[in-house]
Length: 58
Image 1 (cartoon, one colour):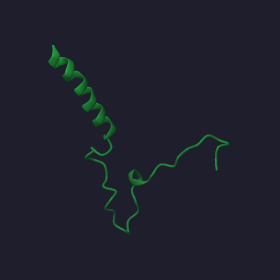
Image 2: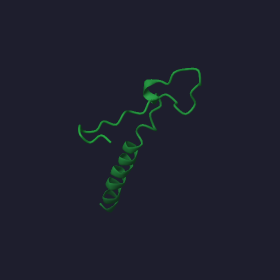
Image 3: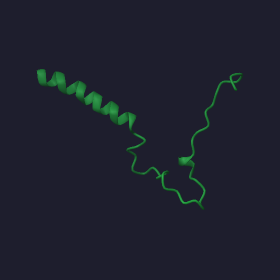
């Protein structure tokens, strides 16, 4: 019984850490750190534009 009490929160914690690192663990994501200079950057490597509510632009 004590083993189950430790194992379940440990499993939940490990799954949570994997969920937080899901982008880094994707084997099919393009490698954005080593891009050739003469080629355009892929859409997956571009940073998304932060959308703000109207009236809150600086």
